[in-house]
Image 1 (cartoon, rainbow, N blue to C red):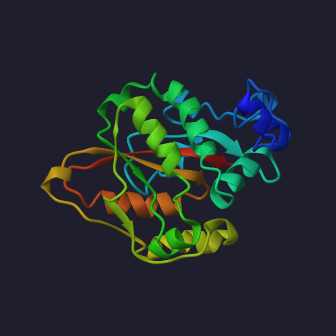
Image 2 (cartoon, rainbow, N blue to C red; image 1 turned 90 degrees about the horizontal axis):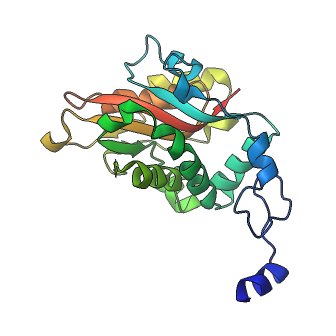
Image 3 (cartoon, rainbow, N blue to C red; image 1 turned 45 degrees about the horizontal axis):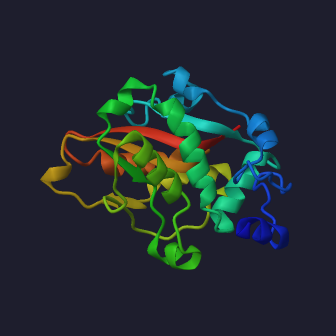
Length: 227
């Protein structure tokens, strides 16, 4: 009863299309769920996301969950997650994608989930890392440890989506990321996660940092992929 009264004055809306949610719906309406374009990368080890890292860094597995199109539902979701404080979107996508990833054998070998970090300055500005809720949900559902202190961002940079292609690629020439590790971190398989895979330059830089750890291996999962 109390929840119904709250919904009357503060109705919940779909964070993908802004339509009113039914009582049986949460975060994303049923219509948006059906319209969101799934990549199905988890079904194809040689998928388009995996190929982005050919000849750049060795990766065990790469997959993204949904396609990101400008002015589409996914762009709206990522915008609400990244800039509007709606971390429940990451939780929803994490719960959804976990069901697919549970079927992939390689996930039994992953030791820790590592989020692409944001700089301390940006953390103060935004108040949260937009991939945290997604990553922690995957960690819980897949029974994998979540480690947000191993990989650090050493330089402040503006949002990648506002940069042109050349500037994103130039990110590889900057030492933006580093690792703080000891022998307990050796010989582990790390799952690197991010919100949107575009050129792959940020993830490549993160991967190179993680590969400084002796015996380390990396796989990559992102919420979405620019398409």
